[in-house]
Image (cartoon, rainbow, N blue to C red; front, side):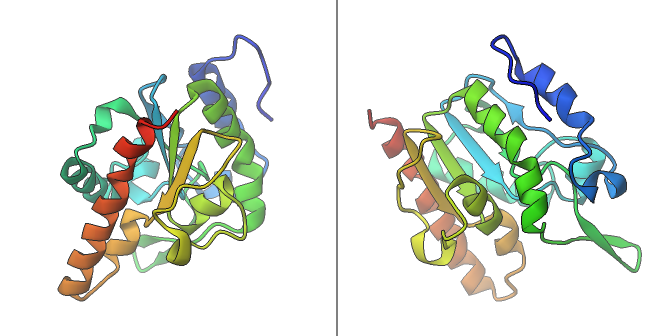
Length: 203
C-alpha cells in the first residue's frame, strides 16, 4: 500500500509500487511499469496496462501503441515531452501463444488493486487535464459505467482534475485490419487529442 506522506515524491511512490503484491499480476511480469514524463505536467495520459515491450523496458508507451500515440499527438499539435504518461494497471497481464506474450485484459479486481497508485500519481502531478485512453483507463478514472464507444471526446466532471475525457487506446487501432477504417479511427483519435488544447484554456 502506498504511504500517504505530505512530502511524498513520484520517485518515492515509484519505489513503493515496485514492492506491490496486492494482486497476482506481479508474479508473471518482468517489472512494475510506473508513469513517466514531466512531474509537473498539466496533462496526464492514462492507458490500460504495459505491453510486452513496456514490460521489458520498464517504461510506459514505448511499444507499437506508444509509437502510434506519438504520431497522433504530433498530428494534434501536442508535445509528448510536456506530458505525464502512465497506466491504470502497472504490471503486464499476458497469455502465451506460441512464443509470443499476448495482452490479456486486466480483471476489475486487478484494476481496483492498482487504483492506489494512479490516485497518488494524480495527487502528486496535479494535472489540469486527464485523458483516459481506452475502456479500462476510462473505468478506472471516470467510473465503471463509462462507455468509450458512446462518450469518447466528451469532457466530464471529475474530482481528480478540472478537465477529464476519454478516447480510444492506440492499441485498438493496431487491431483494425481494414486500412480505411484504421485511417478513420486515427483521425478520430487525433481530433480527440486536439481537445487537450481547448481543455487547457478552461479555468
